[in-house]
Length: 138
Length: 98
Image 1 (spheres, helix red, strand yellow):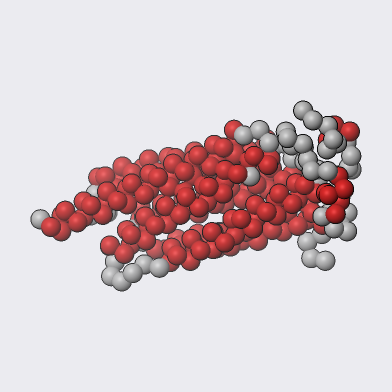
Image 2 (cartoon, chains in turn blue, brown):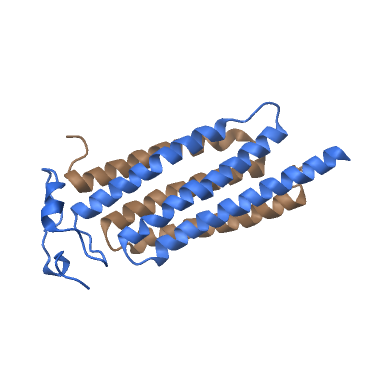
């Protein structure tokens, strides 16, 4: 009787975590399609990574710890790696976008500030399209 | 489903819904990868795509009740990050290894 109850509770817990994780993963990709600007779009997939995949990995850890002898620690590796790399890749993408002067709704930072962070590489896109001048406001 | 009689009804239902939602997420990020107006948009979509694939592999592991695919998930996470860094660096510096 108690083992059946434990089984039911663990399954309910894992099912809840799976639903939360899958829901947040979908929300992250939905925001990626729905939002209108690259700098806005950078916001949502990070939440999908931390909350969505994080919940799924916790669900998997609970499930395998309950099912198999010993504590299951594979998931911690994936979780730690994803949690460390998600902000780094978002930062690098934002840097690449600023370097290319990807247009933004709220206007880009001043050109002098942007040039300071450009580095000495070649820009792949010809700059200063008059539409994207930072002084212009929408 | 018949090979795994221990996996209960609730868990199977949640797994089915989870597969549906994560597959929809993969398709949405694929859509952004196709229509993305700029190059950074496409890198971001690719980044999201591999994170969603890791989620899909974790779900598959729970479904099959075997930890066979964790190494695959770890490798996808690893090489996806390397790919994102390489692409972003290529856009920023015009070169990957200087």
